[in-house]
Image 1 (cartoon, one colour):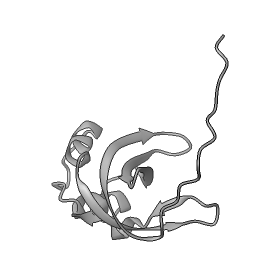
Image 2: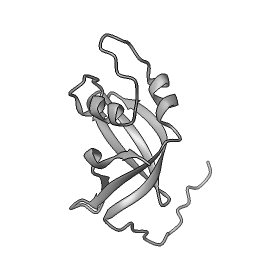
Image 3: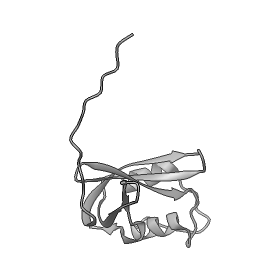
Image 4: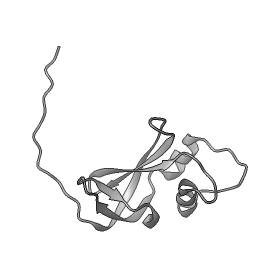
Length: 114
């Protein structure tokens, strides 16, 4: 069995404030709850924004999709693949902050297309 190696890296930081980024992936998870994660590359950092996996015209995820220009029609069924195809590659602007544990977070309500 091959020995696992770790490389000691320099700590990288991203300043709190306004940033440009690109959506690079969309993932679905069920633990501990059903969530959709939007992964955004900002200055080499892959930052996840998690949304409860429910789409309505007033839900957090529904508002995000509408703000990104995703066609929202009540009663229509959409797949994760359709959402992913629409979002991946989109360039955005947003505000970030560092939480009390030192993790970079995106202020979801500030995300908009660039």
